[in-house]
Amino acid sequence: GRWPADCSLYVITGDKFARGRSPQEIAAAAIRGGAGVLQLREKKFSGRRLVEVGRELRRLTREAGVLFVVDDRVDVALAVDADGVHLGQDDLPIEAARQMMGPQRIIGISTHSVEQARRAELAGADYIGVGPVFETSSKEDVIAPVGLELVRRVAQVVRIPKVAIGGIKAHNAGQAIAAGADGVAVITAVVAAEDVAAAAVELRRQVAEARGNK
Amino acid sequence: GRWPADCSLYVITGDKFARGRSPQEIAAAAIRGGAGVLQLREKKFSGRRLVEVGRELRRLTREAGVLFVVDDRVDVALAVDADGVHLGQDDLPIEAARQMMGPQRIIGISTHSVEQARRAELAGADYIGVGPVFETSSKEDVIAPVGLELVRRVAQVVRIPKVAIGGIKAHNAGQAIAAGADGVAVITAVVAAEDVAAAAVELRRQVAEARGNK
Ligand code: NI
Image (cartoon, rainbow over all chains, first blue to last red):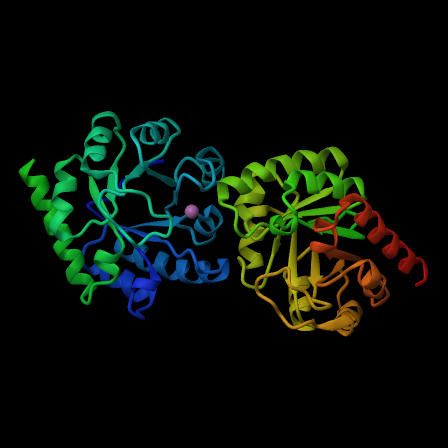
């Protein structure tokens, strides 16, 4: 797979944090604010609804040249012609996903240790998520924060793009980049913001500044 | 798609009704008892676990010449090389599933009205489930029973195989067949039985007897 995207700011949907705004509305604002990757992640949606919403997000992201990834469901990713799928450690094995997705589509893997990060790279992942870096409450299966130290250690041994995730806000995004992350992934910092586009702009600014300082 | 299977007895897994016995154990006993179709349906399992268990059920069903279908997840069905997928009205649209599954694999659709049954057939379903025929508590999204009358009406207008589902036990299985169903689908009547194989044998016997009387 290829990874041509700008992963500085990777925004993940989360309908329950969206204050009643639709996933399409959130996505459009996040894209205006500079998100380079958008992930559809709605654990409570039916397959039918995932496909309906996914098709609209596909249209928005395609128009904007933004990478579009679907969480967990390879079938939904293919049905909506997403660029890729994002798999957790309990989701389909990457080998099974790759066989269905083909060599061109992107597969990202959530990792919580150096060992998992190494294994994902060896198995052909196109990028990894590393975290949760800080305390977070937006995912159901809460894992103890791994801290910036894991980002540093993973950055030393893994060459594919690494996106820091978990409790990342504008005030700490720069620390994740300084520790070696290529970008930051967020749910609530953008989705729950009163001004979604402005929140995205500010996160991107923090990432760019931290990169400039490296 | 083709439908070469004997759908007289269609057994659906349901781990929470299995009294601690593994899906593999239940499946093996159901097959010994004469199930012609086995469906893996575990709403609480992770993708990883569905693939693990699905691969074992695939092995068992292949050895026995039993049709193997996965509920809801086209990606899991493909990953374990199942014969087909079973879709509810809220799952992926059949057109999207067919594109991924190809013409050879089987797609079944749950239907709760004549209109849904007609639509499924027109859209290229290989078989339909019709129900819930009787009161049932084994599915999370409980729908009011549609009764034997719907089975009768569907049987008059739909030519693909029709499997009656919902609250079917040995004592009423024959009524579903008499109403026009080609087979009966069960969860608890088999999965929760103390002797799983014997429960399957008895259901098959009731189906065969009702068929003989037609
Ligand atoms: Ni998942």
